[in-house]
Image: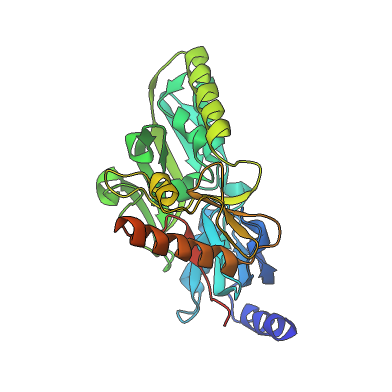
Length: 307
């Protein structure tokens, strides 16, 4: 650990000046919803979009960069992450309504966007109350729930690439698909404009309450989990395939397939990231053997595995 800290401190000396915050050998896994995993060599929290762009323009090209959101659908492997890990903070979390649009920073909670829309009488964003994480991540993966997805409300977004260039894009550029967008891997979304339709705040609130009740009933929300683990294959539901393969309640170390909803892996107290990933791979193997279908990870697995 001391050697890793010294390496991180050496890297900081090579970095551009910033108005934001730089932290060497930063514990990262503990900040994710799984609550486990390794450290970031350097964690960077920019002060605003221009600070992010200026930092990236001046950053030496040999230093790897990765963006993470609120850690809701991320598994940080136990060996941690090399280079710079960027996490957007409060400066990117503002949410305001303008007419039928909601303008949100990329670090704004999906649930906060749903609430602002409800208060402004904007319908169509209720589903975001059931989507864990932030708007930036929701755009990248075209997040969805309860019959709606980001592409249904998306107008435009701003992103910064790893050379510090700012891009403004619409839905045609991102070519949204199921739990997927064509956003370049080196883009960091900083804000978005979303549009709904006119609605009655009371009716919208009732819809939000209904979604929350269904989610509370069906999903393990009061445990350490990264949310939905595998994508639904075409015409299939991942949880049904996992259940059919006999994986409900399956354990590996401190990780377990949720009994309540078996497309959720949970940390039952002392799981390593390796436990969780190995359990997920065991589930994929069993589903493949039982059904012939190969599940694809929805959760992002980042960083280095330990030997």
